[in-house]
Amino acid sequence: MNPKQNHLLDILSEADYQKILPHLQLVRLCQGQILHLPGDIIKELYFPINCLLSITITMINGATAEAGIVGNRDVLGINALMGSRETTQTEYIVQLSGAAFKIKASLMREIFQQNQQFRDVMLQYTQAFIAQICQTTACNRLHVIEQRLARWLLEAQDLVDSNELYLTQEFISNMLGVHRPGVTLAIQKLYERGCIRYCRSEISIVNQKKLEQCSCECFKVVRSEYERILGIKHKYVS
Image 1 (spheres, one colour):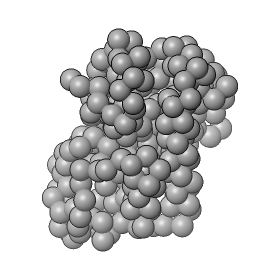
Image 2: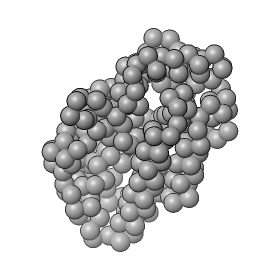
Image 3: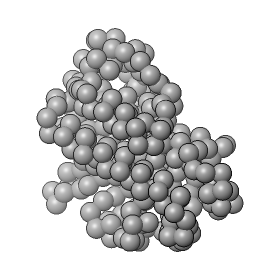
């Protein structure tokens, strides 16, 4: 598997890429696997290839919601390069099983501190990721569940390069921060409109254009920010 299947690694200069290449370790991540708990030191960063990772926040009452989504245009654990080696609020969890390349945070910090060009790319990525978090926050506050689910499915499709997504309704409800019956109804509506097929724990996107019509503007806003800031082009373009 080629590390450059991760778009962030692909846009590094060849010199920077060659510096970290010998230290990248290919790993297989399984759905539900916890990579980081609140208060833990961030010891490793992950560059997803075809898996999907979530940054989640759990409230005192146990309710969970997704704050950020990390896929093949991203790196998980970027805050370890910014002076903070631990997080007090967030948990990192695997949403969709698949492959990723991991690397020690200490090595990444060293390269980040010593190499201006590498640092610029990572800071530009951080800007794009913050844009995603901001847009997700607004989306969760202002848009209905059906729109949010459509947006989330489109993002997942982009970030794992696949129309087939293996997800339970319970898992989706936790990520969106809504009750399961609301997710069930939203899935049914998207199915009736010819956007998706759903069978047990598998959602298949069968008509991307219709799914985009059911989504809010947030999907395209975030995608355009990644393209504008990092020059990352996405496979699925309507």
